[in-house]
Length: 179
Image (cartoon, rainbow, N blue to C red; front, side, top):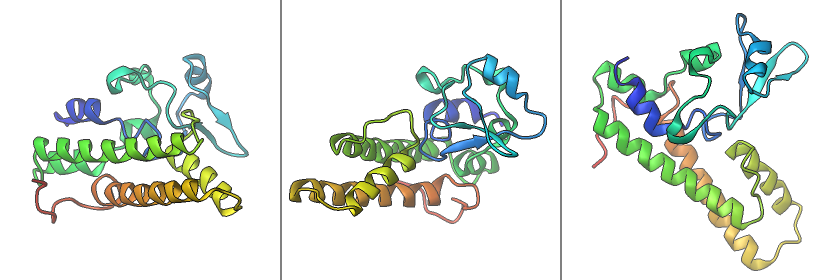
């Protein structure tokens, strides 16, 4: 896909812990080589995976492991990338959707940090759920609870954007362009 590098380097949502919690290695992926390059591969019963945000994600959404990246990373195309490739969306519209999603994710991150959940080495949903458990346990002040409500609403908005505009099972072809 000719648009892949430019869109992906403007986005990074599939690598920064916004879209996914982890990436499962596939048959043929060399876990030892990936680990040797600095990717923290976790070995579970019959699966190996690495957590998101990806430790190989660098400045400007560049992958430090690009030539040796795992199969799932090679094969993943978000709905924006597919829509541009299919001609059902333009690069400019995809970039606007990316910008909107990144802004929504940044707002969730900001609110989680203000509420004390500042572990940037964990996927966004994992951070949100950890904080959610804390609030569900109770004992929070009224101002913190009000801020938590804002964070929950922001996470909901982000999930709607991701579901509609980035997960491949949904098509942007039927949607009008973003103005």
